[in-house]
Each structure stands twice: as C-alpha cells, then as structure tokens.
Image 1: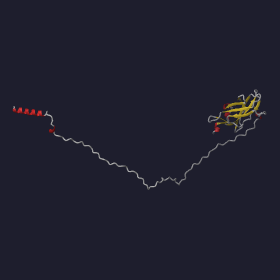
Image 2: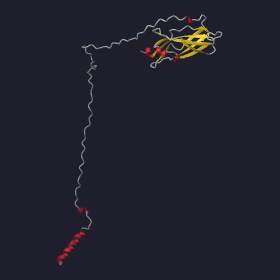
Image 3: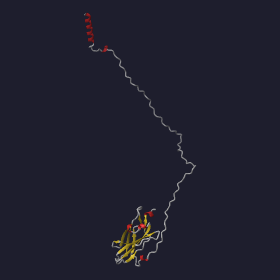
Image 4: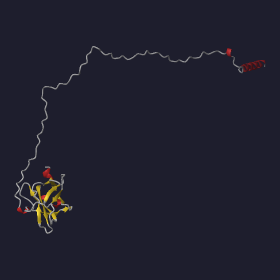
Length: 229
C-alpha cells in the first residue's frame, strides 16, 4: 500500500510540472538557420571598339566594266516605211453643154461643209454634206435646186444626173440644204468616186434662170476600206 501511495504522489508532481509557464532562461536556444542569398558579382563595363579611319588610305573609284572587244555589238536598223501606192485617176470627159446657161451667173458664192463623204461602218467621217448659197435676187426667182451624180475615179462608170432637192431660204438671198448619204442613189456600188453637183435657179414653172459652175472633182465619196486599207 505504501508503494502504491508513493507512486501516486510522484505522478501527481510530474503532471503539475507540465502546467507551469515556460521560463526563458531555462529554455535551450536553437541557433537560427541563415538563408543562403546568392551574391552578385560586379561585371566591369566596357565600350565597343570603334573604327578608326586610316588617314593614309586614298579613296579610289570602283573599277568600271569595260565591254569585251571580241564580238561587235548589233545596232538596231530603222525599218523602212512603206507608203501606199496612189492609183492614177481618169481624165474627166467634157461637160455637156446643157449644164451651161447663157445668162449671167446668179450664184455669188456656194459653200459646202466637207470635201470628203464616207460610207461603211469601220471609220469615222461625214455622212452628210451641207450647202449654203448666196444668190443674186432676180425677178421670178422661186427655186434653188441641187443636182448631182457619182463618177468613179478610176473608170468611166457613173450614175445619171438626178436629185432636184429644193433649198430652203431666209428671204434675204441665202439658200441652204443638207444632203444625207442615204439620199445618194447607188453609192454602195462605188468604192471611191467623185460627188459631182450643180445648183440651179428657176422660176415656179421650172424655167431655168441660172446655173452654178459644175463641181466635178472637189468632193469625194469613199468607202472606209479605200480610205484606210
């Protein structure tokens, strides 16, 4: 019993010691571990080497390329230009005396809008011709008409004289008329022809008072193929 009581006393003493506060000077100081911090190593700074010009070197031009003297160079020769051959036209026959009028010429001036009529669809050009005539006023003058025909330039082929288109006037002695290509009969049968014409002044009963000089080779009517072969 005594041994059991002694053991209980010792156990109670030991359990009481664990509840006491910790005394600083009785505790064992554990040295703190130092963190290993990497040490920086200083690197010396230096400038890049610079190019120092050599004062004793002369500047010389780069070598030029000299053409070889073996084979001569070929030069371009201008190509000769070819000109179209001009066909000789026929000699026009004498004018029929019917186209002359013994009376004085009543037509002071006769102007036209073009000297070249064209037909065809492959070129530009005039498809009409406009006439303007100044006529001397005379008694019984009523009409100024246009008469014309086509004469082939390289043969004796021609159309008959026709037309008779009546001019308009401004009551001051000026007469004018515009003839369209479609009004010229059989023009498609001529590749290159002269458009010959004459103006006639007459009375109301178609009596001729005067005629203009016949224009025989002043105006051409040409197909596009003949103008631009």
